[in-house]
Length: 333
Image (cartoon, rainbow, N blue to C red; front, side, top):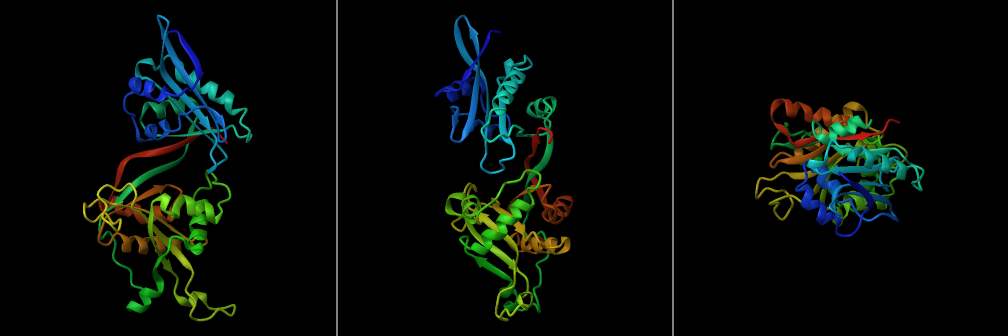
């Protein structure tokens, strides 16, 4: 092979698609979308490898490294090589070129990370390159009525109304808890400082696909003290945000009830809660939101309370993993 390397050009995506075919994994499909011309705002470097045959150059591989505004402590990197050109050193050469570019990133960050599916050629390549798993993520579908419905207070409707509330996704209170929870469960790859506006944009506004939110509050007694009026609501202990966007067959309210498809939900809790309190909050909310219709949750191993609530359901067959696991792999710290 006579291999030449150059920067990405417009039209390379179509040329490579002809050689690569469809993506081998979900992660590959996502990362292909990051292949684009190099630039500095945001900072990105993208390289293409061409196989030159009889003077004709055919793109066969590509690699990209770029900064991220969210989780800025590492650079995202991705390498893909056509199947018939693998095990010939192209991937390793491209990765070395990415590392050279990363050393010159304006942020001063040079550690790389990527997402792979266990047991795939991509995972094997990452391991050989010294990238090790720092997190595992799974999509979990929870079947209807997986848990016994919780009883709030004295069991009356008014007690339940005091603690379970439909909350507007524009709520600053909700944004605050969501942002702090996301930060707390991503200590392994810090998201940086999240403003209310950033949290809104990422998780709660119309463009994020957010459809609605249900929150679980502590009893009103938790609001007593420090001169607070008895009528004040209890503190927000848990939240469930539903997303209608991208759910096949979802009906008008995003429940997916019309087709039986699960509703995507972001489920979390106030990070200051103790272990048992956090588990109770997410388990009670899960019982409520999955009482009639299936829901789908993205579960990272770092989400300890949610794992404690969901893993018994996996073991009992009341929930299952959708698709394959995802590993986030990274250069050593």
